Image (cartoon, rainbow, N blue to C red):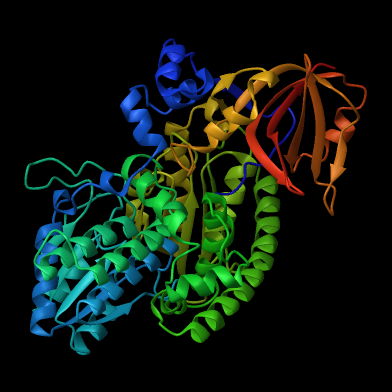
Length: 587
């Protein structure tokens, strides 16, 4: 969720087609035509659908039994609880995996089951299910293993558990790229259910899948579709955890995902969940109205710091503990770890940028960036890959090599280039890999790096067209300053939570006069403030990372701007302003 790096004259403005029925839909919604246009850009043109989009309800959640494998998995977990079998939840080390693990672990515990969790070490074990961990889990007496946010590509490894007589349930949402594991049940939103169709929401994240399985398991144990009050409270808290996973994993913020995120964000400030309370207090967000920004840029990085700089098990302990003191202790420790992570990340990013420029990987003939080093910290290379994508706008894959000749890689992509497919194209050079369209990870032998880099670059040259190397700025509509009144911008705010497939609306306004010289803001002067006028309307705009505009706009009197309309409250007064995304001017 990194912010797109801004450079003058570097963005292609792509304005959405005008929605011809905007006035009619707006009248029925009692909203502005601009609002109808914004909804249409997101595929919402029906009035009732629009009302549901703007007012997501928990009753809009699909029945968990509609998801492939969910009923069978819930029955097996309920059976394990009844028999007193030990259940082990095998999770992943990112926020989605942590929250998924916490949801199922806590649910089984509340229902009276014996449960433990296992999460691999990011650097020592890498992504996914590994045989050594399975052997230890089995030796420790597990009767049932449930994977969350992983396992769909681990058919060969999971055979070891089933051969040992241990039942396995796989719950995952990642791309299905090979043979399915031969296990007791597979819960996956894109696989066909009993009716031959996938569930209505194929975009669930790992925590969303875990939430649905916990819900169905609770129904079975309670003996009714309506769970008891204690379990109902748990499931409401679980929506808060699922919201963290949904937003952090950048799955499409539409449909059911939007319901989970909206209600989870709404419930977080008042939640009595001990771990979440500790996390919020440590981040100075207790009792604060939260949005996607707070999750993506404040809470998720703190949780991720556990797995990036140490072991993710600590973050899962935070999300499952019932001790407020322990929760605050862990949360404060994670805050410090995140600060250290930021320092390490900045150093690796600077080095990687130097390598890209020295190797001419930013040249148009190269459609991807593939780098490796023995000096990098494997826990942060995924974030650095995101920084490279922001700067050079092409897929980036970074590999950290160790002294034993092993390589761990993490990559990020651009729209239109499926990194999971790219890794599959290169599979002969890899030990293991996984991911989805926009992000992926791998393990490899160091001696195969050059061959992998060539194969990945070859695939990118086949798939990435020149236009994709110039970042596009998707603009929802062209309008005027006087259209952006308080009520209209308040309506736009009802489209939150924002995220993938429902980004914050961006509007363009042409022919704005600059009322005064641009002003630098902030400690480093990296932020710019402009005061615009069009007709009789004046409006302030702020551009983060655009401080250079103070010099570039010297002598300029008229500009076209693109940005996000916002309501800003300062000293008790709320006004409309625009968060700049781009500025165009004539010399």
